[in-house]
Image (cartoon, rainbow, N blue to C red; front, side, top):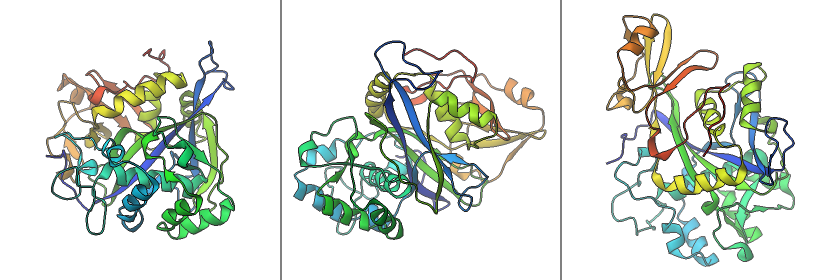
Amino acid sequence: MSQVAHTAKWRTSASVILVASDAGTSDDYKATTEIPSEMLLMLKRSDATAMVVNQAVFPGGLLDTEADENVAWLQYFEEFGVPQEELRRLVLIRDDRPAILAPQGTGCYDRFFKRSRIWAREIILRLTAVRESFEEVGVLLARNQKQLDFGAVACVQDVPDLAAWQRRVHDKPSEFLTLCRHLKVVPDLWALHEWSAWASPGFLRKGYETVFFMAFVDEQPKLLNEPGEVKETMWLTPLEFLRLNELGEVWFLPPQVYELLRLMGIKKYLRLLDFAIKRGGLGTTMFLPVVYNCEGTLVYVLPGDDCYVPEPHLVTEIIPFPGSADEFRARSQRLHRYAYGASIKNLELNIPPPNGHLRPLKFQMERQKL
């Protein structure tokens, strides 16, 4: 059974944490050996699309069922020479899959074809993430015939007349398949490593559920911002992004802060790549916060905490607690929670992170070693 029953309250989306190798242009992340450091791509949303001015996110967007679930993708993969076992390799068979990654149908995982749509979410949401990265910043993660080795580092394709194709796909997402056919490439699904999943708190009338994938490129690709959605793009280290957030120059929702705090733990590109490859097979736990009001302080509780509930998707209101945040904390031995105002604060995790993941670090704490 999946962890959470699907509901239309949450709109499904996918994002890419794009990591580029860098020899060390950042003072804080300069390589002390020949091993390059990692730089992450984030974008500032346009004023028309941002929740708050200077909101920054990883590239990504909403699942488009017509574009991303179309069985024509599987037919194209077959025509291109992609063995079905390479598609099957993307599908993780576990009883504890969150609903967002659970199969969208019944039957055996070996059945990749339906009459009209793909049903393996591991394939669908990777297509969403690759398409949205192209729509937002003009980066096409794809492989041509000569690159069809299904490697762990992503390939980036040049797109002639990039601005015109970006507009075309942005206006009609199903044209992404047309673009791939035109360039004779396939989306590089195998270089997207499953990383995490987040959902908006249930007290919101409408929210999002998002799978985050991690992809690695050898160098920073050329970008083209989609003017209606993207105000600015930034390549920085996790620590630099967190500093900008503290200075008020960018604004993050909790998932971005949490992931940046995790990524402070491995500052080298190759070590992070190795970790992402190995961790991707260990599954994903949906982080759907359950929120408690502790005398005006909102405490967001995550899976594994003693105060987390068995069916968090059914919690549609903030839960009142008759006491302070400290008194609420004293009720639990196992802690996985944070307070949230302008940003995450007082993040606590005193249990092993689920699914073999990195432990988020304190902002000023020494980075953990892998």
